[in-house]
Image (cartoon, rainbow over all chains, first blue to last red; front, side):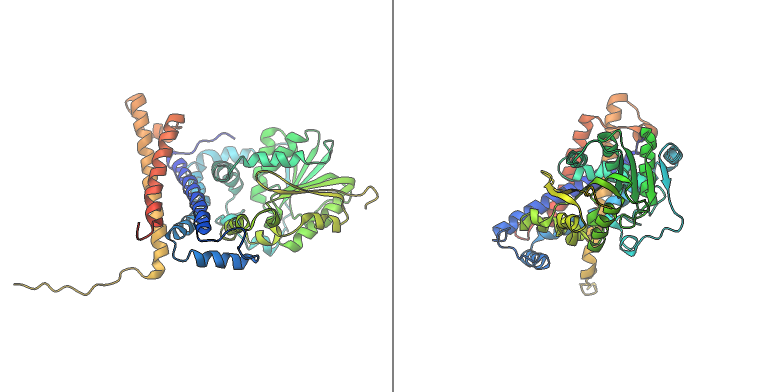
Length: 349
Length: 91
């Protein structure tokens, strides 16, 4: 939906983007500073906590590091609030049009008795004030403002192109029925619909507010997506009912024990011969120690409590242990996003 | 000569307020930015139209030239604040 922010709201978000870009520059300068002090990928501790401690000790007297910490904290706390404030300036003008888009061929089923698990309800992911359901229109605010006007500008490369890269890894192109776990506000859902135009698209996510934005996006596109409030580890779908189960950047938002449940449930709902295509953030093993520290630093202070543990996992093992065959791991470049593909055996049940 | 009695030096901020001070400084910087942006928009509108209304300012969408000017001013403001925070005492 086309919309236009007021001057102050636009300027607030522009400031947050510039502040985060400056924080990113300071971080690179800190890596150079550490190298000058003799600390680098070759000699940092293996243990991540010890690595953080060694780097913090080396930078204890660094004003550069102090400025980076301040700017990082500011951005983590403020980027969502700034987008919220920008939206509030135009809320009255656009809310009726946004809500009108809830009506259309894309459906959203939200069980009244749905209780999100503590790992989800007790975390404000990305330090989003109030969490994903903190505002009835959080889906619009996050999907259209935070993501398109902030995230897309502060991360290197084209964040949307990575989604397309992932779909290119799908073992087949002829899927008839696709399930996306963690559909959220629909950025990946849209790519799935574009890449597999013949397929029926189903999506599930714990956040109703985010899925409502996915629904609006589907309706704008004239698509008939079927969206459900629920969990990837407890899919409310029948056995043997999908050709592809896929997800994008979801595993690092769940505890490791739940990752295993994702694979189990994917196996159950896939038809024999169906595929998984699950992509997530870079695995620690695919990064050098300094890169891994930088990623972990951003996650630790950026509202990503499960990142470290899931980034250390080997999803190919999880897929194979749960019965998938032809399991393969792929590392996308330059993002280093990790993607696992695998197939439910023809004789699988 | 008349002596003026002054109290002893008093420490005003506690150590645990330093972080608040840093965030207050960034909040102020952001407000300065929104006003600088507004001023830049007004300048661009005046140059183009000779007069502006509040509605013009709110509706204004910066073209590439104004975007570049805004980016330059924003970068300069953030650098002025952050570089002073980041510099070492001997610099």
